[in-house]
Image 1: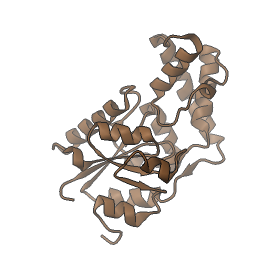
Image 2: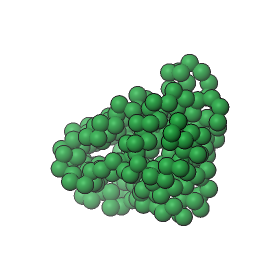
Image 3: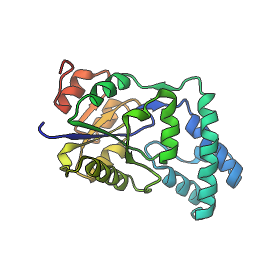
Image 4: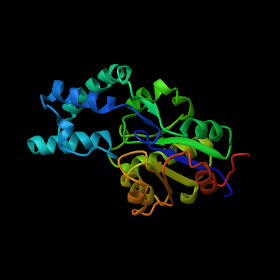
Length: 234
């Protein structure tokens, strides 16, 4: 495919698994700041932005949103707790094929790597640090930019265009994630979508949402590279 391609990666269950560290830190923050035990047991957080998780839990528990001051205290507490939870996570892992793919992609000037994640940017950076993956992602769109997933992807595209000094067409953008939320958000910005079954959804379940490509994981190198238009030996 001619021209540069922007690859926007989701984070949790797409690039890494934190061994539940993020969920534990968030649950502890809800308890410490809001006195809500087992808050995340009330919703399915997969594919959601951090602000939308807080909003939905608050509405379920007390029928209204958290105030801006409450949100600030909650997220500050969460970010303070997250590093310790990560340090104690025995099953933190980079997902299969990711490191090899990122290393090769980073050497290709026609590929632009960015994040498109519902995590707060500070939380995303903390989660990626144990695997030293931040070096691949100089920018992105984050839950700290907006609660709305398509909008944070648009923000990531705008940042990529500013860095490259050129406009990217929708077909030059690939949204990569492990949930239907990622597929639908990518489609909302008219991007191509690559779904990986490394999260709570199977390849078949993801394929039912009609991504442009669905794979088990990034070890399916032939399919991924053919989709992106480059071979392993290039």
